[in-house]
Image (tube, rainbow, N blue to C red; front, side, top):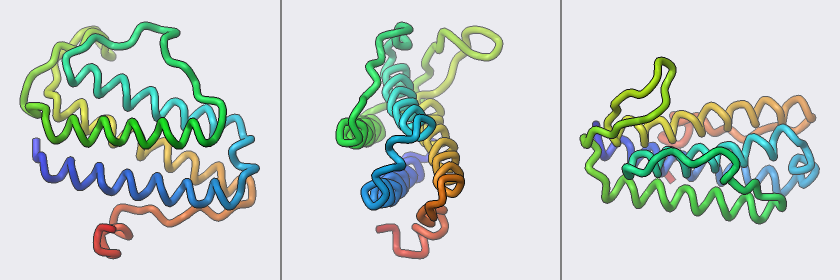
Length: 155
């Protein structure tokens, strides 16, 4: 697993999330939308759970994740999840094989790097869903394509 690529993708993710938060701040009604709020909380939970599994912890028990209610709490939790991911990318052995207890065909093995890549891909998917939802609600989402970030000099 290419550690530098994962770190770049984590930097990109942090930037893309911040671009979305700028829109949320300028359009506070978006945070009243149940789909967006639920999805943001799901992104946090997915990141925390996958980083924990990559660390060698078991998956969280059902019902242990506390959803964040206020926009500020959600934003802070997303930043904390990004910090945890950055720490994981800096300190984990990305080639270490982790026994994952649940998968589409039951338990399986995956490298810590593959699990951390899933954190990034999972968030990307849900950020795109939120962008679509913004459009449905009459708000133009920010341009957060990876290549756009790259062309801006990877801010």
